[in-house]
Image (cartoon, rainbow, N blue to C red; front, side):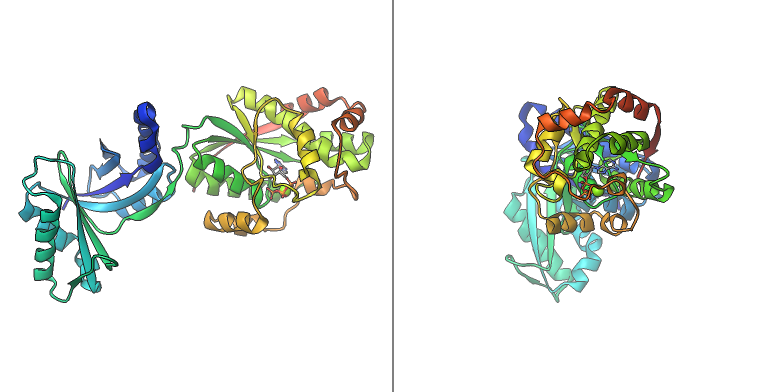
Length: 391
Ligand code: ATP
Ligand code: MG
């Protein structure tokens, strides 16, 4: 029996003239995600994409599992291909869905007929298929409101498809349709969530991590790479820059008033990120900041941070409570890694009494004690690159 994965691409359908190019990006992302499983054929038709493997060794279970992580997909299901005649559709339904139907008590048939030349209309397809299923599985009864198994028959241009229940997709927009952004990634809970949220809106990710050896360890860096690998399951591969910030931080500590350490460091992170963003063709910077979470995330501090860059700064967690952020981090499987106890450069140099209401004038005054440009330049020169892919 020929089997396919049918993919529904919800919000894409709203994109009018752009729809085709959005779909093309989605298909490219799907192909990349399945590349190592074997060759596939992709058929596009009416807001559904059908993926058909070209050989028998293709692992459909694994492929279906991976589809749950592809943004731009609202729902998907495995389906059997049937000829466009009722006898074949009905016999395909009883054999393909045997396991599900045997375990169920109730079922319902739904039909979608996009080929209007098919001799039976949707209600007739449902009635005939339903009757045939009841003949073969007499223990079943029909429940149109809340069936255990929903059997769907789709009659399309080339083929008919028979499928069971649909699985929920990751939603959002295909990665790459929303431009490119640089995520400032720490080992914490918030920034991997922020990365995931923006990838969900179609942003392609480049990652920047600031380390401060020997104050921060190799394990701390590995932890960040593990987090990125988990995000990459959704976002696709992430070009990652690890920037050595030790000298910058030491100079800040030696030359600036303690209450301004964090804010000046965050501004320097922005400036460094802006330079990498320009090189990497990123149109925005992304952080995991959340209003009021810590001193550097008061509205005043965020204002001073924003003033360090002319790029838009996306902060998808800005209006979220910690427990909401934690919920997402559990769902995307970053939480357990995020809570591992490794130091971050932000936590190594923490002032005892950070300024909660810094003014930009005061911050700029403090920065006069530093050669900011030279420090940014030096940090950029001491940067290493890693391409992060999902495991
Ligand atoms: P997170 O949980 O993501 O670490 P946080 O609550 O610990 O966030 P901060 O440490 O103040 O908050 O950092 C705020 C944001 O700054 C982070 O979400 C991240 O985007 C960025 N950031 C912090 N530390 C680093 C770092 N070492 N490298 C790159 N970005 C960082
Ligand atoms: Mg942090």
